[in-house]
Image: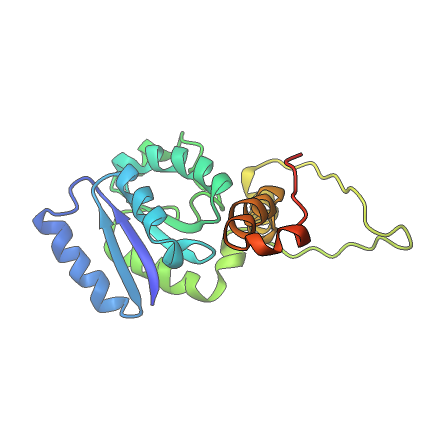
Length: 206
């Protein structure tokens, strides 16, 4: 099951309950989570790491919570390994035109829509081509005989660095840090295997 979070402060009113039923009828391969606040939505993500970390998921956010959501999402996407395909569900298109997330291919690839069929259409279309829709491209570099080194690029928008940031989060999460080795050796091995103390080299924190 793929995951969708719908954030709306009136998520439990009659209209939204009926719309959620329509979403579930059309998007049968998706698991829906709902939240009436942005902070609760990010708590939900943190409490369900297996569902959301390192997995693309969708966020439907109501217009009056959109700015708050994107402000937090920009920070969170740098701190934890998440990436969301977002769409703003709102009747007031012009309200968003001056906002930094408006038409941004990384922050809001689904753009602003006013009807639930448009939300469904975006999610179904994006399912097959999300990397392209979010502006992520694979680049090949010919370094000749120089080997690896530092490469610098001038970028004009956040979406240009979205893929390197996400890839960096994946790599960093898989690396063993010095503190991890320190805790293993001093707090575990030295505690439970005292008889092998002479074989254990005590590591110091650098």
